[in-house]
Length: 357
Image 1 (tube, rainbow, N blue to C red):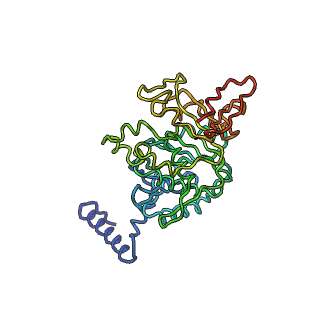
Image 2 (image 1 turned 45 degrees about the vertical axis):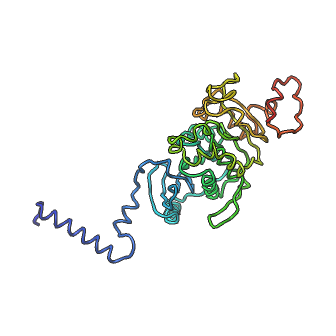
């Protein structure tokens, strides 16, 4: 047998390969055999987490939608992309993987984590890991394009994610900063329309809000007219600031048990000289409070770092398990304006003023 290693043989082999691929493409409609083959090879993403929002979860698999488009992609637990295209295309691929790997929907108790404005998904990782390892909760760490779409659109995506978790008997929600406002918008529901609608899932049991701007953010109001702020924080930045009065009409107070953890120094002054009273450097403690909360706590932490506080880890797990941050005797509920406030128990030192909005 004669072996040819010269340029002519190389070009000949390349031409033959191209002819074979062209024949495959001509013989069948749609993508070529080669294109379909290469589409099955997992590929790293180019990042861009601020442009993609989770829509569907199955174990570590996620279907995401690109902000402002119908483009979707399917990622595994290592952030490798296995499919792209329409939502239906990605879902069909995931269903194939589910059959091949015999993936059964997870059951038990779930906690859905929602990060804050402009924060990455991994900012909630350590807290989620603690809840899973110490509490046995299944963690759904949701990524959403926080600066690219409105709070209303993020709430709709949260509704999609919850709908993709049919086997859980119990669902708890945990938000940091704007993530809490997304939760409140979701809880308000949306009437069905041509663009879709949702109602809050009856399986939701408890909610923990960490540093929530429950009455808007004065920092966002102060910076709202700046071009840099508008570019970096987009529509949701405005909604937390100058457009708060409009947004709050579409927010619900949770009907289930919920607790609030705020950051502050505990000295009445806080971390920022630009904010009134105690604060976490971004939010005043007063704006985190929401009437109806079952328990309220303040921890010494800055806004961006509060989610990694070991105290917050412990408080959150205890609230999800027991409905209080420290103990039933030391609960600090926030009562409705004008509600009759019970007297402190004998020997209890908490100030009654803490119970008032």
